[in-house]
Length: 438
Image (cartoon, rainbow, N blue to C red):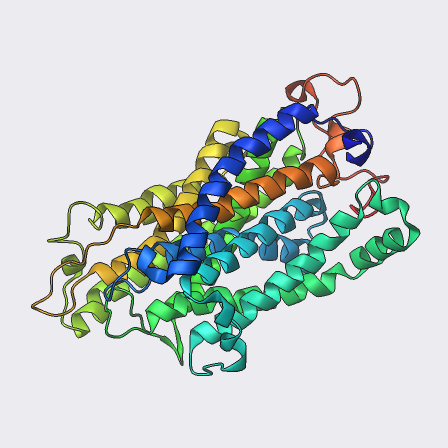
């Protein structure tokens, strides 16, 4: 029965191996479910958050996941709006990764609000003066857009596709996918930016406060920029991990190289803007609030918020991966490509870390000291819960859905190992079909 659900012509691991893998990840999932039950029934006293840290591990994880899920909106924008047709062979997987990133983000928000059954208050009693209201609306709407983009992949399952209604529905949805891609790009731009705008308007927290244009601080634009730059890197990273686990090639090199090149230039321009923003903040904004640059990094608790984190974010995890990805040799060398995408992913997570936790840790009054915070096991477990759920969901989707249009071409029956398969020319052949027809 399992083999009848697998896409025709491709190879998958034996059922027992697949179930063993799912079972191992399910252990982490069950640990998270236990913590989730405790949080839902006992409330936020299960966390180590306090008056100083109203935003903590959950919000950092939420912002990081949303940034990494930015590969979906930016890849879809490049494929359907800009017209980069080569990306049709990875856009399905970008949508899949983005969908589960946003599912995870909303799940984490369900924990953080303390009473998830009152989550509808956000929409019915909306605070129209809050950036977080716009975030809630756009997040929910964009998750709906991603679900619509993901639905045709489900309908293309080998057994579901046999039903004429579902077959025609899937084909017709692919024909109008550009509309949803454009809608998703619009929604994602605003909620990514508003997430950055929240620390940017906190004038009582000088570390995060920024000047800007009208009501939008610079962080509004930097958050959107970094998500567009690093989101595709996360898509590439998960694709490479999937290829390694499957021990086969799933996407041609020219597709990966194109996405890596675009991401590299986006990252290079973002880091340039980030450096300019940091310098202006250090010499103009912070002094205007009565602070010196080193006040935000000196006399801190241990090494959690030392100056190293700024050097790591901008230098090691910004300039280095950008320099690798904008060079032809860097993109085409597997080791440096792995290094670049990993550093870019770590870099955007570091950025969200400082914009959530370091903003709240720094004392702003003379009688205050550095605030300390370490998450409870319940916070850690519930943060890993959606990650485990995403791994399971992506594994199931890869096994039973035609996610990669080039998989059969790169791995024909009785073919040699993937590393021995010669690469096709960068140009698509005349007979290459759209994902919906493949």
